[in-house]
Length: 293
Image 1 (spheres, rainbow, N blue to C red):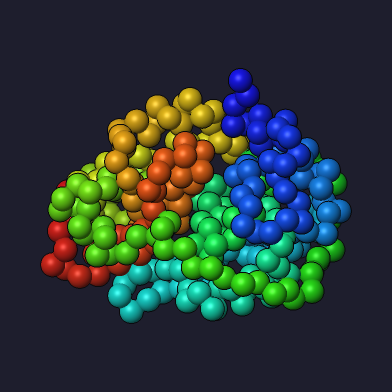
Image 2 (tube, rainbow, N blue to C red):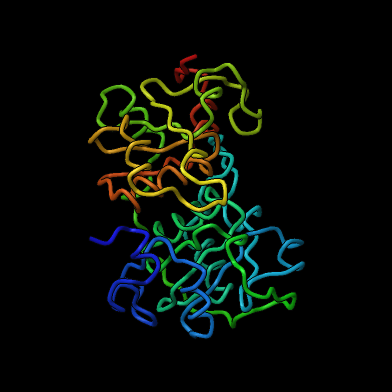
């Protein structure tokens, strides 16, 4: 029986990845460099390079569009304390359309690491665009000749379909913390979970520790040294402490936790998995909310 990584390599029937089809169809969550190389000229495959502009200019996958992740286009600060929250849906939809992503396009995300790639992937899922994949291993997995010429696509019509089923807010997290209706999964290093290290102030208001009831699953352990995702069996063992309940992933600002969300939701197919994009930055903005050290 073929595993998930075989699927990502395109060993399933062609229908598993519908090129040029409606975005209602889901793409494979991971694609390999060989698959991408074979589809670079497909007009409905849009490669988004999330690396900083300087890195993009130094060399990128041919045809990739620069979509630097560290900008307000992908995440915004909110009055409730959230440091890297999802922008208003009309705003992020306009950003996506301006990048040349249309309703019928298949997006392939390229980044330096899994967290940023997973957060952008999750953003497309929140917007109801299921035809999205991550290049396994990111930019360094690409062995083709780099291109230094900037690439751009004409602005496209992108129609968002907001999907709250993959997003948790502070009220839902508070409820899960009290009654155990969902498992809170802390994606940060163990030292931040147990409070021995204080997170950067802009992201958690100087609060050390975790939301009551949260289990620690450090997202950095999900990838191999070359940046590719570990085999499914290893990931299942890594997330075994989460159990069978629905899960809500969080971190300091909803970036690292996107990696945990991606593994649980898209690779392990755990039902009811959500991302709390407000994370500790929103949670700890109210000093009355408890934090365990």
